[in-house]
Amino acid sequence: MTDQLKLETLNPARQEKAREYAGINRKLMLAELALGAVYVLIWIFSGLSPWLQDRVHQISAATWLAVPLFALGFALPYSIITAPLNYYSGFVLPHRYGQSTQRFKEWLWDQAKGVFISGILGLIILEVVYWLLGAAPQTWWLWTALSILLFTVILSNLAPILIFPLFYKYKPLDDAELVDRLTELAKRAGARVQGVYAFDMSSKTVAANAAVMGLGNTRRIVLGDTLVDNFTHDEIETVMAHELGHHVHKDVLWGILAQSALTLAGLWLADAVMRWGIAAFGYTSPSVPATLPLFILAMSVFGLVTMPLSNAWSRRREVMADRYALETTQNPQAFASSMTRLANQNLAEAEPPAWVEFLLHSHPSIHKRVAMANDTHSRRATK
Image (tube, rainbow, N blue to C red; front, side, top):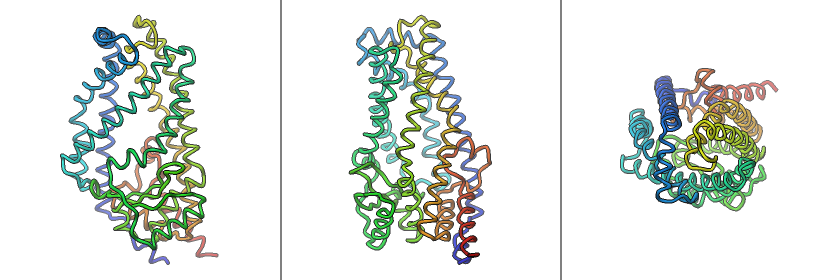
């Protein structure tokens, strides 16, 4: 059993590259944060917001049209400015470190689809926000939070059948033995799934992943082909047991509720900031399009400040899911091997600096997860 635990070990060369890769990505993240902050502050303090609002109102003063026109004028320059950074971080760097398998035109097409989808979803949210700002100026933040909660539930249900297929092709897994094992695992977890699917993750990356996607009648098990092709059945079973642990602990429900609570607090803060902006910049009301940069600034700062709290909560739920996987499969060797294989294949930093894990990571380090499996194995061996 000890030999099985050591079957898959961390590759020192890969870990050296993983540390470099993670370090560069952190610097790029800081650069993007700084650039975004400067961009928004320029719009707020330079007079660009009322200037653009005046131009938009020459076309239409109706909120339903003025808001998206202002949002387009605000977002388009930023997209152009950050395009080189996005190209480097999303295409050049993953290819340099051997993680991406996409050609440039395929990557660009994915970016276009992502911008279109996020634009449509963002526009829907903005239309709701600014309609409520006009219809219920004192309590808009409460009704907006409830609307976003409903929107999140609907989107979680529809994503596997409407959004995911735009980026990946997936089909029923043709490994009958593995399908039976995972289906039985789902039954033991009390999760009704609509099937077990493999998707062409290898068309974009060498990394491996798996998930339980969807809600209700769209819930399904999905496995990246990079996972199916490179992991043993035992390893895949422990990976999926972890995912099903989230179902057992109702982490999707708790996650939506926790995020909704944070969204409510952020919107309340945005209300205060936008009301300050009315007095400071002479805006006529919070519902005018010129307040959009203030809204974005408030929500972004709140999200950044609360990110360590959100990540701490997430890491706790991930530990619970790991424990469920270890208890359910009774196979700590396969769990440790799967985590180590993920680190090697995904170029993941197995033991990041403590401050990085605290501030930025939603999952415990792979080092800690393997240590938990080894501890479980040791306790079983001594019984």
